[in-house]
Length: 316
Image (cartoon, rainbow, N blue to C red; front, side, top):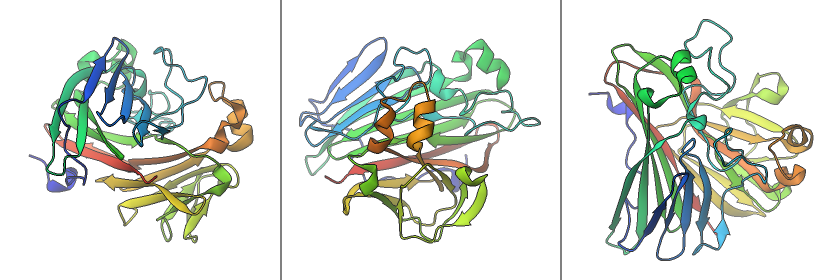
């Protein structure tokens, strides 16, 4: 058994879903819809969430590039890609992840749909949980060669009326220990980035990748976006980060057993430089707030398990 520190507490969301929730499974994606209209779509390629609609299905909460590849040819630009077992460019040499591509392999492997669970809580609030699996035996030959560890990933996506919960379970199924990083690369949809702020990071130390990976301490109660932003906030003491738009709370992002958050917006020049980012002005309507364990490495011994995730609440 693992130490309790490796396991998250229960998040304050319904645990599954009401009878009547519809789940449609095709060769490429899984779509779930609640009786009240809320929905989520998950590609089997990368287990990438590409749509989450709340407010009876009227409000899309995730930004997806108009040029996002949804055919399994490359990682998805937008939605919620899964980053594992390394965040960003891997160490240049001397680390087991050094031969992997940026952000690892989980977002460009085909996952297995493990099934759904549905139930109803006492308050008559429905939800549906979808489970996806990726295992070392199912990796492409190149990925297996680059990272030859025996592991199992189970990714759970739970849709409720006003929230989406995404949780990753990592298990070491081999005899050799391994280190990893993980991140949920969430692209939130906003109406106007100039009216958006992120609260809950004041006093937190961060690495600013725009400023040569220099280290700073956040001095602002509200972090606004006025140019390219690429910051890794580490060891955040409180669990909730709030995205505010036009002075009103828009999203609460509740981390569970994950201590880090990346805030990213490519702004004008970088957006134009990315071939799969469209439209060029799309940076005005998105903000990445990405929960993860990316400051240093998580280590799992034989048979150990790590679990961490997020609960995103739509506050409209």
